[in-house]
Length: 300
Ligand SMILES: Nc1ncnc2c1ncn2[C@@H]1O[C@H](COP(=O)(O)OP(=O)(O)OP(=O)(O)O)[C@@H](O)[C@H]1O
Image (cartoon, rainbow, N blue to C red):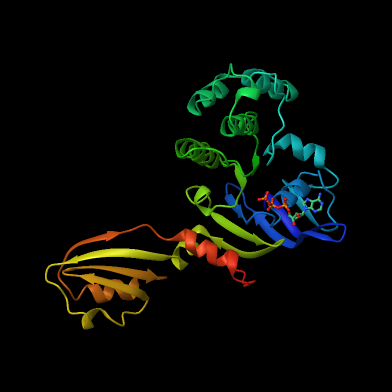
């Protein structure tokens, strides 16, 4: 059974499009990266799933509960981080976290204090004195604190520095290890690529692509730097299937490989090779292509 099941969900704001005909699922123990540029409908989807907005068509369920009928029970079972967090400015970080814990009938345990430390949040500071990133940490901690089976996080890492992004990834990977399911929205692929199993890309209210991260990586171009024992002739390196660009300098070459590596590796095996180094896959530019192009292709 899917943990989140979305069937032809639509939300219009009067005449204006929010989301249209959304179909996707989040499976048990899966991290689903919900990606899209500004205004593509990520927040509308999440707010509809949590019963804050009424869908204009379609249906969805979370843990088998209907998003319209059972929204109160859903909210109890889900850890939610809203896109915009409104916190009382005069309270300290710790007071706010205690307040969230009280709402859930729990005490702040050692685990929460450990996370406060890991994320380097100063619990004594007042909300009004905290930076955007530090406020975001409070949002993240409250979403995880009651050990929910499902996490729905709207742009959780906006405002976090790379070190904190790393700590956040560890929290997500730990939750995944415990079998939890996560819907993680972002407008940047790099924010979900260490944790997501699958991604869905939204554009103008519609899902234009669904893919596993593995498959997405297969479609991304990748640069491979090869050092040959003796410089190969230029002719020997042209027309290799899957190679979109080759730069040769002396006995070194950088190949831009698109898709599968198989033909490339087989061609290389004819040469005597000193070293081979993979430069990182260019996922970001693949992602930008999806944002730009009008494709409505659907890959799963
Ligand atoms: N209350 C509203 N009334 C009218 N249109 C709205 C309302 N809220 C959102 N929209 C529209 O719905 C569309 C989707 O917006 P939404 O906020 O869901 O996108 P998003 O992907 O979360 O964007 P961002 O990354 O900027 O937060 C946009 O065109 C937006 O203008």
